[in-house]
Image (cartoon, rainbow, N blue to C red):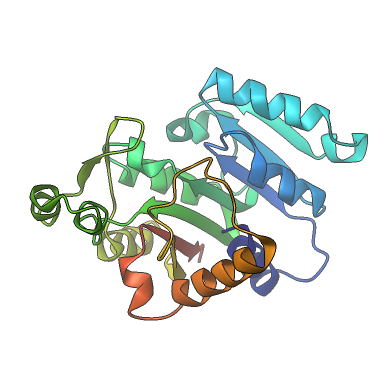
Length: 235
């Protein structure tokens, strides 16, 4: 996932350009710190105080030069207009957030307004066209059959959330002036891997990541990934 973001930044902007990045719903700040270490100026927005505290602690362990490039704010991604001036960012990340937003179109329009012309909007969403795969592969046939006709599901934390369909997001991105440039599948083969599970040996892990990356950019595999990574570009 991080490599896909970096690839899009490399293709979209001149080498060496210091980008202004907004990370909406940044969680523990992993991606924000990765981009700050690469030289970019990053603003992280997170509404969960506990997550924000973890991000502050991680930032405090970084060298002063990196700390100076990161600003962490408590706030909701649906209220970016109250925090920032339109056109303030070259890159806006919104990863793992839309599943918690019942009506996402207004939020996405607000995020697109934050982009300068040519700016990149990066979304990571649950794939609404593949919701039946997880219960089906687990042998939950009732759950698999029910998943075909909905974008609602219960996540591993027991929360009722929602997925997004590629066609719907493609139309939305076009409508808000940041049409889809490219998209990837994420977790094609590894959706059953539990968070916190022990990683395989390095050689096997390298092969696993190579297979995932190849599948994530290849039809028809990417269409059935658990997650979708979409990149829109502000016109």
